[in-house]
Structure formats: structure tokens, C-alpha cells
Image (cartoon, rainbow, N blue to C red; front, side, top):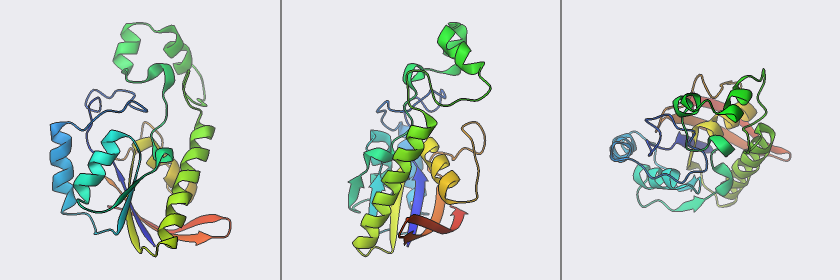
Length: 196
């Protein structure tokens, strides 16, 4: 089965590079235009699984209009806690003590007052596998999945040989991957991954 895994389009807060995690931001007019333009390039799908956040659901409806959709809360972006909906520039200008201490760490396990990477990895894997098994049980051969940059990064890390981080190799808005997946007794196996 194929999963067309796409990052949401340009939302309020994206151009300013805000820590946009659980903030339920809508698409900007340029995000709507981008999703409409990308729709013509997307392979047709039988069903769409989307993060429950507004920017993902709006993108899904624009990329695959009229295709039935299931909201999957576990595909949401990371909760950035105290950094949520703020920018690096704002935090540095304010000399935010919590942010400066967090930046000084050699390795980050998550965000102050927010989610840990371990918790997000577990949540995202469970949501992805639940959606894939649901699609297989319904007999779908190709589905769309609209999520977030951090969510996609963790899915690639777990199911493919691709490695990325939050700062490098980010998936652009309305960019994504074409995954071929096979359900196994102990989870999901990805047999192919190509950029869209």
C-alpha cells in the first residue's frame, strides 16, 4: 500500500518561523494558493488521514477535494511548551532565561514545559500504524496523510533509512514523500520512500 505523506501548507506563524506546534493556526492566503497549485501534482488517493490541527485539515481538503478524511490527533506536531507560538528572535531579544538554558544543553530531550521527543515518537508511531492498519482493513491501495514537519521527520527516522533533524532537511510546506508500506505482525515495514 502507498502512503502519500505531505506537510501542511503555509500557516499563520510559518513565515515568521514561530515554534508552531499545538497552536491551531489556519492557512494563510499564500498557503491556500500553494495547496491548490500542488493538488494537480498529487497522486489520487482513496482516503486521507490528517492531523486534527486546522492547518493540516485545511491542506488535506485542498490537496484532495471531496476525498473522505479521518482526523488523527496523534499525527499533530510537537507541543513546544513555553516556546509555543514564539520565535527565536523574540526569545533572544527578551533574554528569556528558560530558553537560554534550554539552548545551552548539549542534547535536547524535548522542550521546556512541552513534549519530550520520546513521547512524541511513541505517539506518532502509534497514530501512523493505526491509520495504516485502518487503511489496509478498508482495502485502500493508496491514501494521503497530511501532518507536520516534526511528525514527518520522526516517521522517516523510524520507518526509513532517512535521517533529518528539526534544523536541517526540513520538509517544505506541501512537500512530502511517497511511502510504500507493508503491515507486519509487529508493526509496519516501509519498503520504499521517495520525495514527491
